[in-house]
Length: 183
Image (cartoon, rainbow, N blue to C red):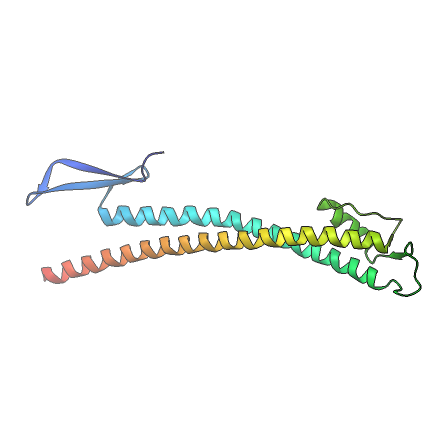
């Protein structure tokens, strides 16, 4: 891929000894310097915008996974909390609320759980809680990294738009000044 902006000296054209140059931006020729920089800045900001939208999708998917794992952990915690603390046997089983949903979410995220129908033992629930907490922590860390990357992309995009807007403003101010000086 070649450079985005290519200067081309216009042969035989000079004004008061200054050679004239036109610019080609992404294949479109005949642009002056300000126009070329503005077009390049807007193209850069659009490219960053499209890359940022991909990051947004990743962040949303990861956030859904974190939410789902948090709900699975809540159901498991509620189930282990419903077991008797005194006089209960280690093999006592308890029904997990929304067990089919909990099973499907755990399986979807690669967490295997030991079930007996809709019931689990305290030991199985505690093992499951540990696995879910590990996966939740891992996904939460990844989510935070993705959010930082997204913020970086958005900052770059804002800077590119700001640069393009400043160039347009400067070109407009220069044109006004020239017109004012003519009169």
